[in-house]
Every structure is written in C-alpha cells, then in structure tokens.
Image 1 (cartoon, one colour):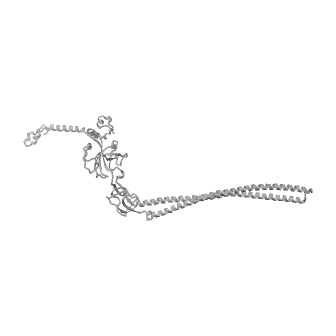
Image 2 (cartoon, rainbow, N blue to C red):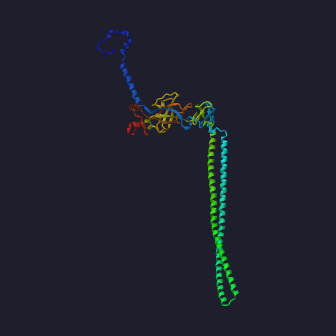
Image 3 (cartoon, one colour):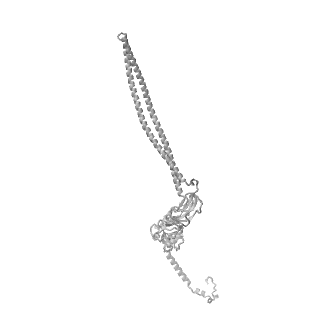
Length: 456
C-alpha cells in the first residue's frame, strides 16, 4: 500500500469489499495537508508579531500595609497564675477590654497590703527628710548667730585690748614723771644735806626734804607697779583676743560640721525616698498588670494558654488577636536576578487563592479574575528563602480587592514590565535572558534600535 517494495499485492485485493481503501486512494490528501500546514505557519508567523507583556511571576501572600494592623500575639508581662478568662476564641474585643486575670506567684509581692505599707514607709522617710531640712535650717541660724556674736565679742575684746594698751602708755608716762620727781627729790635732799652740814639749814628742813624724797620714791615704785600691771593686762587682752577668735572659729566649725553631717543624712534619706517612690510606682504599675487587656480592636483568633490555675512565665504568649480594621497589601518574592528591573509604582496583576481566574500572563488585559496592584516598598536585604520581598498595595485605578480577603491568603503575582513581540519573548526565553530593562523609550523603538536597549 505504501509502494515501498517492487512486489505488489494489488492483484490479490478485492477492492469491492474494501470501499474505504478505494476512497483513500482517490482522495488528494497531500494538497490539503500542504494547505493546512501553510495556514498554520502563516498563523504562527502572525502570532510572532503580536505584542506580549513581559512579566515577573512570583508567589506571595496577603498581609497589611500598616505594621500595627497585622496579627499579633499578646504576652504576659508578669509571671503568674491564670485565675479567670473573660473572652473565648472568636470574640470581638475593643481596645482596653479585659481578656484574663492572673494572680501573683512571687513571694516578694504576695502581701495584699504591699502598696499601703510601702506608702507608709515612703511617708516616714519623707518626714525624716523634712526633719533633716529643719535641722539644717536651725544650724544655719546658729552659724549666723555665732558669726554675729563672734564679730561683736571680737570688737569688744579689741576695745579692751586698746584700753589696756592706752593704760600701759598712761602708766608709763606716770612712771616716767614719778622717776623725774624722785630724781628731783634726791637732788634736793643732797643739796639740803650739804646746806645742813654748812649750818645753813636746820635738821627739820633736812628731815622734811628726806620725807619728800621718800614719798617721791614711793610714788615712783607705785607707778612702776601700775605700769607692770597694765602691761600684764595688755598681754592678757591680747591672749583673750586670740582666744576669742579661736573659740568662735571652733564653734562655727563645729556648727558647720553638724550642718554637713545633717545634710549628708538628709541626702541619704532623700535617696531612700527616691528609691521608695520608684518601688511604690513599680508596685502600682505591677498591680495594674494583673488584668491583661486588648491592645486594640480585633478578634481573638487563638488561645495559646488555656484553663484556670495554670502557671505562666514572664513574656509567655497567651493568645493571638487579629485587628478588625486593616488595609490589605500583598508581599511577593522575586528572584535576585529580577530585582534591578523592579521600581516603585510598577503595576502588578494578582490572582488570589480561592478566587476563580483565567490568566494569560502575556496578555493581562485578556485575563479574568485578577486584581491590580502597585509596588510601594522593596526590601534591600534578601529573605531567608533566597529571594527579595516586594510589597504591593491596591491600585486605586483598578477594581477594588475582594472584601472577603483575609490576611495570610496565598497569591500568584505577575509584575508587568514592557510590551515586546512574541518572537522576541520566545528568543529571550530560549536564551535564558532576563526581561529587558527599558529607560523610558517604547519597546518597539528599543527592539529596532539595540543601542537604546540596556540589558542586565
């Protein structure tokens, strides 16, 4: 039948019994096949010049734009024992609503009157500080009084010293006058003796002159004695002056020493007061942490700890909560080789898991069930999966994202780049080149003029 042998069997075949063979031999299938192939290749040739949108495909998941809108866990600030739950999973709570109550387990805080007793200690120490302050004020008054009294006493002693000095001068003058009188009396007595020896004066006159001499001598000795006594008084006044200065210096120094000792005690008491105030505030804040409240409006999604009477550690996770108000976003991951092509505000087509869609990656306008987005953030550090994270927010010019979306849902993302012919995209894919990186000119101009096409 295929005529690949010199021997034929046509004479042995009864064609009346096999009409299909007769029909096949009479059909001119070769021309039809050639026409079909010609139309097929013509269609492929036309398809090669149809615009194709280059894109970067990546998986991702739904998240939120604001950090405080993402699911969060509530931790226990204090170690304690669970006493009562006020919510259950799925409940909606407002900010400040009580979630559960824990009791204290540390023996340092078991006293039910801990706050009041700490307050009493603080009050006592504050009164001690006040007493120290009053004592310091009294010592200041005492020091001022000592200084004033010392000045007056010193002036008094100086006056006394000056009087003693003047008295020494006066007694010295009297002594000098007495010495002169005694010399004169002695000379007169000598002349009287001579006149008496010559018989010119009587014995009575001589004795009178002798009595005057003796009286002058007695006055001289008395003046000398007063002079020595005045000098002693001057020395005593000088000693008293020095003693007064030293006495009041010592008294003032002692008062200042008492003042500084009191101030030291006051500062120590103030340090204790500050410590007690800090301790009291810590106890007050700690007492308010026994009731764990919701940090924001949201839904209780999962209780990590459960039951009553269980002991929890400090910082242990208690439950998770999902905020009720959030602005959705998508975090997608791209390969490092594609990262230089991505810019802020690049458009992205997103297919959400669970939403039916018909996707043509090269013709986004013909796709159905995808939603638009724009890039608003790009990570500068690679993630643990070896890819870079790109944050996408809803495109205000596109259709609104579904209201039923939930944080954590998976997504299939297509980051749209430039329009190129299909033949060019096939050539790029066969050679393993990354998408083209254009800098403002149209894709057709870039293809026709390779000098403007900057590839990575």
